[in-house]
Length: 134
Image (cartoon, rainbow, N blue to C red):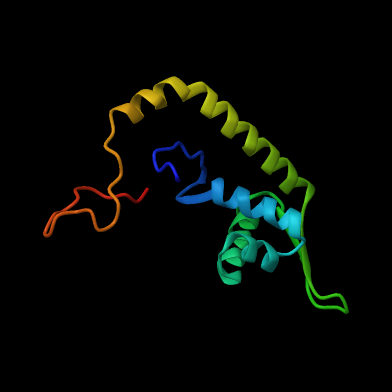
């Protein structure tokens, strides 16, 4: 079961999420598969979505996190750059440090929360207040 009550570390640049858990997973998948399309397939997202996320990451940092090669006899490919490897490693450390630092408080907050409703469990006409979007 996916725990929807969780902490998500995001690195913002203005209103843009420069780096977060999804982009970290995408970068890791690109490193493992050697391609954006392979990473997208592995993550169950469209190639277009993965490409847009890579472009966004590359725009947010001083130099690209992912380098791409097009065409050729062996087809294109993608590689995580040295900066991309550093960003990913630092981000994973930040996630661990943040989780450790707030573990007790987060557990307490979770104990004060409702369990998420399963779709279809609401009574007819029932309304949920607020938004579940970030």
